[in-house]
Length: 460
Length: 110
Image (cartoon, rainbow over all chains, first blue to last red; front, side):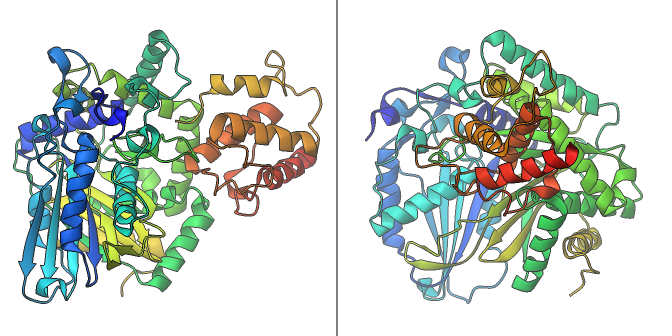
């Protein structure tokens, strides 16, 4: 075991604290943790015994996986308390045997897991569910569910790649360097802010600039389909639509042409905004604006990518209903906003603001966000993560037939669209709180999304 | 995280006066290669000595955020704005190919 893994508690990054705040908020209001999930649909041959053994070894070598998250002395910024991690208790692997043939649908146990609770203070950060069909002979569905702060989307894929490499004998459970593991050169959450932000005064100014920009959104406050956050049980479900290869090729070409081959995310964001807008129109509801955060990856470019902790900031977009009616207009507005935000240093400012959340009580940050956005947290959440596990065709001996992310979303805004590519096919995963979309509205949502992505009517 | 504007200053100052935002003379193509390469190597990418002016920028880790920061840095250093529509795989093949694109724009502007 490397010294970084046990020598001292590992500080949460600013983004970790941001997510911890949402975990506290979701528990209080919705009775569920703020979790994230990665799903692999596998062919036959999954090495279950090998996986359980590997999880035990990896857990022993990387106590962060079982580390209680605590705020030292009740005042200092919270840490992954690795010296107190329970090394004798690996993250649980629950096996569910299904005698019948698998269907295209998602196993209910994955939804139950996503709507469950995981106690951060006890180090209950990571769980696995393995659904075997016909004893594994007909394939396996695999879900990794984690407290959203343990990995970000990129880190979770790196973790899966690393597990696969360990199983193939190409890596070892204890071979992660500090940079590759928690993304730390020194054990300091300050490092997560990047080397260019100097003293506390400059950081304070950046955080205030971020807050001022956010406060500007309130002039035309956003609205979500779920309405403002309220005390209601979290009941998330999701459905994944996988595009055919030809459809994907067409969509990707349109995205590259219209938004640029390095920034297709704006194309997908525009389509998802318009899909939500179509549902608003259907309900005859008007939102003064749509406000959506988009994650920006803060990892050093070209360096070994950190697995643990969240290394992200956020770019926020605000668009008005009259800008949404026409796709090219919307895309043009999003491009302008993105450039303007990056030019003004919004990404760095966001990191500085989230870093201040390390010192704030958990709930305070979510409350502040609600106050700034007049009761809402956002219009909806969105992510486009590009190629999903590129280069990884097998996991623990089984062929990966498909795979995608399924992030949790609080009961309000109650809707998150996650798009990614796997083996040349686009996966659209729409996670939503039950009851927020009627069946007819879901049909409208999907129809509008297909129409904009494909540039045609969208009906099959 | 990508660089802040202040952090890019040392690289840019060698190419442009901050008191006078107008470049003294438009950089040559070779100078543009060096400017872009310096920005990439010292500020935007965590790369070693294997990264050269001919290396693929995307393979070296240039992503959507970093490429926009690169465009802003190029604008500060040269006064030339590279529209995102010009960010084709061919133009982003290497520091050299991107410099060629910037040089073309510079010629057209003058």
